[in-house]
Image (cartoon, rainbow, N blue to C red; front, side, top):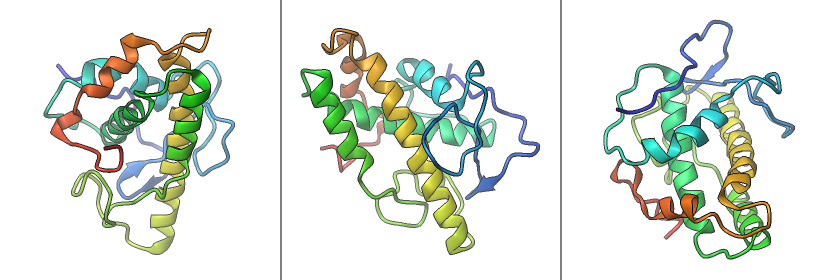
Length: 177
């Protein structure tokens, strides 16, 4: 059974490309509202559910937040593929930073991994808002992922990096190959 997002209430949440711009526990500047430090956010859910959800080829979408969970699961999978050859936290940090500097495609652009999952942006402003949100959420996910993919002494956590070999929903990220 796939784990779904608990963020089903969308009242007062801004949307871009059919995706809710959910609050984040983040210090990274971007369009996401800031949530409380003690609250669970979508990045926490994505990292917590990743090792279970990565085994599924199909994902039943029950709320718009599930679309974001799918995107983040794919991103975590791509990030782990980048971290696979990195033997230290410093090397992993460098690899994650280079991943973060890549252009973030939005629906309708080449390189977007899930055509049809999100509706196309209605305007260039909506596309830019969604791009900035995805960039912010990817940076936040990357930082938190490093803390679970590497032990406190800076060595790789094999129980996490082993999942780099998995293909989420049978999709291969061409940029990480």
